[in-house]
Each structure stands twice: as structure tokens, then as C-alpha cells.
Length: 71
Image 1 (cartoon, rainbow, N blue to C red):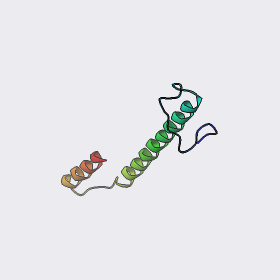
Image 2: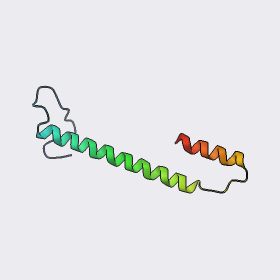
Image 3: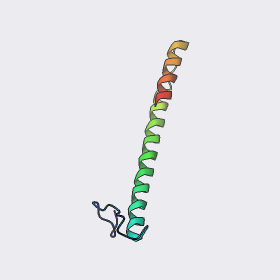
Image 4: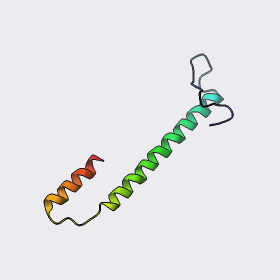
């Protein structure tokens, strides 16, 4: 994390709102969340690119598109 925030830190109502420690805590939390979202988006794109196969009939194509819509 950061020098100000330890891994077991949890913001409390007893400390000043958005002090440096809380800012550092939430900055780390948001960056982690952003990285998770970007990783999942990359994984989804890779899966979609791998599944971009030719389908012999319309039923197979519709089934494949429905599977992708669920993701």
C-alpha cells in the first residue's frame, strides 16, 4: 500500500474526514478496482476474439451470440 496506510487499516468515523491516511487508503482501493476492471475487460476481449469462428448455420451463430451477451 503506502507508508501512511497499512494493509489492515480501515477508515473510522473517529478520525478527520478524508485526511491523508484516508486519501491514501481510497486512492489505493480505487487503483486496485480500476486494474481489476481493466484485467477483466482484456480477458473478455481475448475470449471474444478466440470465439470468432465461422458457424455452419444460423442456429449456431445465434447460440454463440447469446453466450457472448451473457458475459
